[in-house]
Amino acid sequence: MAGILIKIYLKNGNTYKYQVDTAEQAREHTYEILQGGYRSVNENGVLTLFPPHLINKIKAIPIPDGKLITTENPDEVSGT
Image (cartoon, rainbow, N blue to C red; front, side):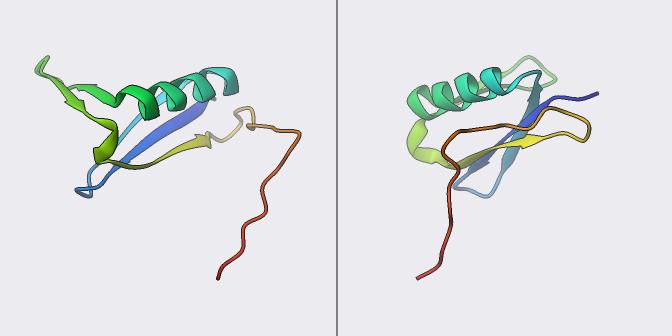
């Protein structure tokens, strides 16, 4: 299934992931996670909230055959 994978990296080393359909949804979800933290519900129905200060990074990764995330202002990365 095509889409965009949202992957949340916590400072304790755990990662959580889920899928959205569009780049717009990916932008909205990553913004909301950075503002309010990440809410996880496990298979037993237990809700856990990870506040923003426990989040190390968030990635939005295009799934094969999914739409790429595009921008008019691409980044350039360099090391120091």
